[in-house]
Each structure stands twice: as C-alpha cells, then as structure tokens.
Length: 458
Image (cartoon, rainbow, N blue to C red; front, side):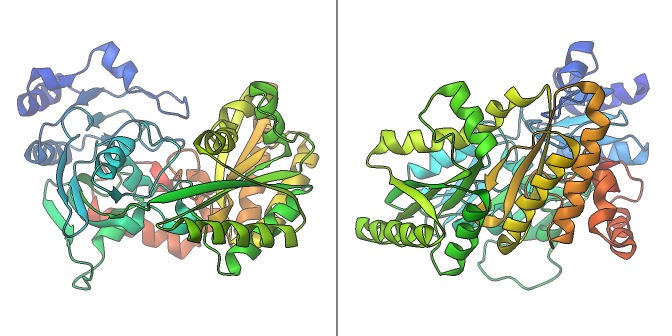
C-alpha cells in the first residue's frame, strides 16, 4: 500500500491529471497477455524525461517499487506489479516519432510508439524496419527492445537488437544517460545499449531510441511447402538455410496446428500433412525472387516435400499467411488453458526438438501443438490442458520441454522474455556463477532493487 504522502508527492511531479490510485486505473494496469493479475498501488504517466528522472529519484530515495510499462502485451508477466508499487505508464506521453533521418537511415523515437505505426510511416518514405513481432499492431518499440522481440522476418533480417543503435535512459537513482551513437561503428566504452536490450525494465527506464533503417525491398513473394512428416519439414529448414538460401521467413505449423486452423476457418489446408512451411523471399528484381523460389522448391523437394505452392497474386499470398497468423487462436480448440512457451534451439537441432516434444506429449497425454519461426530455430510450444485440475502436470510437461531445449544447446525464450512466468527456470539454463553475475549487474544499476523486482529470477 502506497502511503498517501508518497502518492501526493508523485502527483506534485506530474500533476493530478497524470497520477491515479482509483480502482479503475489499478484494475486497468493489473494484467498483461498472461492474464495473471497483480494490482499496483498507483499509476503515473510521466510527460517527459525530466519527470521520469524525478519519479525515479523519489522512488529510489523512499524505496518504492516502480514498474515501467508500455502496451502491457507481454506473454511472461514482465510488466506486472507482482509486489505492488507504482506503474510508470509510458503510452500516454512518450509516443512520438522524433526524427526520420533519410540521409543516415536512422530514426529517433520515443518508447511508446507502436511498432506497426512506425513501420507504416517509414515505409511511406521507401524505408524499412524489419522486426515484426506478432503483436506489432499494438506492442510498443520500447517493449520490443525490453524483450528483444523477433518476428517472422528474423530469418533474413535479424531481431530487435540488430536495429538499436543508441538510446537514452534513466537509471533508478534518477541519472539520465545516453548509450550508443548514431554512427555505424562505435567501440568506445562498454556496450550499455546491448546490456539494456532484453533487460525487461529491471535496469533502467528507456526514454528514447535511435533505430537503424534499411531501404525497403521493392518486391516480395511467398510459397508453402507441404510435408508428410514433421521430421522432413524440420530437416528441410536447416538444410535449406545451410545451403546459402536466405528467405525472409521460414514459418511452420505442425499437424495439430494445421487441423485447428482448418477446423475453425475452413481454408482448404492439408489436414493429412505432418507439417507445412510457409516461406517468403524479397528483393528489388523479380528475376531474383523467381530464382530464390525455385531454389527453395528444389531444396524442399530434396527433403521429401510433397507439394510446393507459389502464391500467384496478393490474395493468394494473404491466404498462405492466414494460417500462420491465426494458429495461436485456433489451437484453443484443444484445451481450456494454453501453456504457451517460445523455446529456441540451433536450427540443426530442430528435428530432435520436435521429436522430443512428441515424446513428452505422449508421456503426459496432452496435445502440444507447435508452430513458429523455424528459420531462426524459434518454436512456439503450447501444452493444452483440458481440465484445470491437470494444470500442475501441464507445468511439469513445460519443465521437461525447457530441459530438452537446454540439452539441445538452446534457450528458454527466443522473444517473449523471462518475466515472472519463466523466472523459476533460469537456473536450468544458467550456472550458479552466471546467475550471480546477473544479480551483481542488477545491483550495480539498481542497488535498492526498486525497478521491476522479481523478474528474470533476479
């Protein structure tokens, strides 16, 4: 419970119109995409960087917990006030595109700019910002940086960290820092930008981002490969990528996911297929796209692809991607509760990963539909629990999946982050010495542990 004196002092910093502790605001900021609920003690909307500094300085002095929040669309509870405290809500005043520098191919933005809105604006200028998380229509760029979000285009273009050149941030004691430069090369000093990316708001509050842009490719085309078995599909992924072909995206759905989408939307998907891979190529010459698609087809056929369909127009391309975009909502036909994780392994270990998940599915008797970004080894696994009394066994199955991923030289998360949901699993992936290093880093930035405590197992 936040003392009224502290609430009044926070109101003095931002004004009564931007500081609330009424029930409506506390409920509005008590949940994210996990649907877990933790009510904060207050919600504060800073108007500028100086106010962020004053708020942090005050909270640090009085040891008041502070949780930075963008859209609240995360899947791991990273922006939940699990121990109460003050929500630092950035979406109201930190949502401006500050600069688009077409000469140097960079943009400066505030952290609450919506990813898709930013993409639309820069594409009007013939520019391109590749990171495209599934939540791009509503997730913020600051949230994307805090979780190091990926997306479907990661196979060719990389993920958020590859496009953050510099940032401004406020430390827990109120100090304002600049990290990184607009220059392509910068090896002066420690890589603070890299440290703050994926830190989930535990080290500092980001107030501005400088992002790298590239020229927008003129053309794109998509295709779908249909495979009899999941093993054939996974082999096709890594063997294709290893051959030197680099598609924009390599997305897959297993049989359970295919059947779920087809049962719900009746799109003519092959329900007898073990898996489908949806792929896309882009470039500035149609001839180059044709070459890439035919090379993909040849490599898929070498790995037992039964059928290779190339979209012939924009509508057919849209239809191909419909299944992937709607897989997550469709698989709810298999259970009342979806335990959704996003493990990642080296691409060559994908066949072993999917085979292992199949064995775990048999062991526990749960359907575990899988889909995701196989071009970068990132698989979304979904343990579907029909009866909520089986929830504990569902979590046991998830634990085995995490262990499997780590044993295959993989990681607990490719883009959703750790937050609260995976905090207890950190020691599966990191040694005691590595966890101590993380804790020491947290203490160096935030000795009073006021900033988003409890996340990432710290």
